[in-house]
Image (cartoon, rainbow, N blue to C red; front, side, top):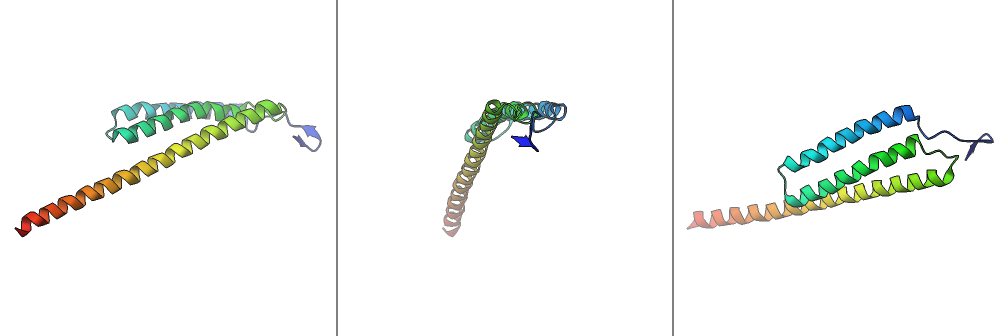
Length: 127
C-alpha cells in the first residue's frame, strides 16, 4: 500500500494509455463478435464463441478500470475491480477450454464418420 512510506494514489497504469487501448480492444472484439453471426461453423461452437465474445466485451472495460482508474489508495475499489477482472478472465478461460473440448469432440465424431465411410467403401469394393 505504500512505497517508501508514502501512500500510492496512482492507478497501475496511466489512464491516457489504458483507455485508448481499451477502446481499440473493444472495437476489435465487437467486430469479431458481430462477424460470428455470418461465420460457417457448427452451432455449438458458434454459441461458445459468442458467449466468450460477450464476456470479453464485459471484461475489457473492467480491466481498463482496474488498470487505469482504480487506485491502491482506495483499497476497497481496487480489490473489487481486480476481483471482478480476475473472475471475467477465469470465465473467458473456461469458455476457451469448453471450445477446445467441443473441437476435440467434433474431431472424434468426424474421425468415426470417416472410418465408417472407408469401411463401407471397402466392403462395397470387396463384393
